[in-house]
Amino acid sequence: MDPFRFLLGFGPLAVYLVFIGVINLLRRPVILSGWQDTLAMALGLAGLMVVGPLNLFFPVAAFLRFGPWVWVFLLALYGLIVVLVLFWARPRLVIYNIGYTDLRPLVSETAVSLDEDARWAGESLFLPNLGVQLHLEYSALMKNALLVAVGSRQDPEGWKQLEGELRLQLAKVRSSRNWSGLALVAMGSLLALGGILGVLGSPEIVAESFRELIFR
Image 1 (cartoon, helix red, strand yellow):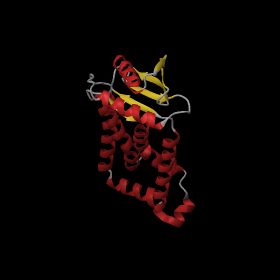
Image 2: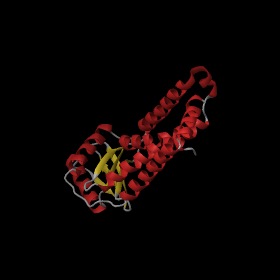
Image 3: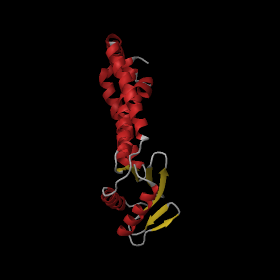
Image 4: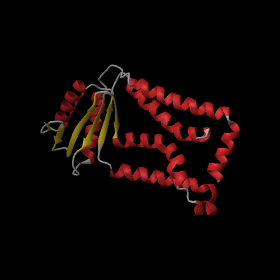
């Protein structure tokens, strides 16, 4: 892979890895809604989509008619696919950098404060008055948790209330740094540095690769 395509493909991914790594290195938990987490991942993979599938299945006939504007249409198509994924995905909340022993009681207290009939069944939590039923998935290695909807009958407003209250409660929690985030930061930094050095070291190849990709 030439330097331009390497940077284009792995540059956004490098930013995403550094972003997630920094979140894990904070001394407090961070909560992201499902759409925020999915959107960040989609942006991180956008470069690989351009140099991969979009380039591989490039519509030559459309390019002959519209020229480089075809790339705008292709990126818009990728954006629409991401929107559809966001629209159809089950509600979920992602919580970074928190221990299980801190998370489980906090989720329980928050659930009861919103719905006095809330109850656990194993790792599943049911809030009948809020219209929320979720499953708690936890990664001990990364100290990250996922609260994902169980079943299709979910109340979006109930999830918004749960997210808002959890965000307030997590703001009061202090946790130790998750040093696993260093691996993500290091990986992202190496990818970015490799791409930048490659571009700076071969400007002629980069220019030719850019023209080939955009103008065919």
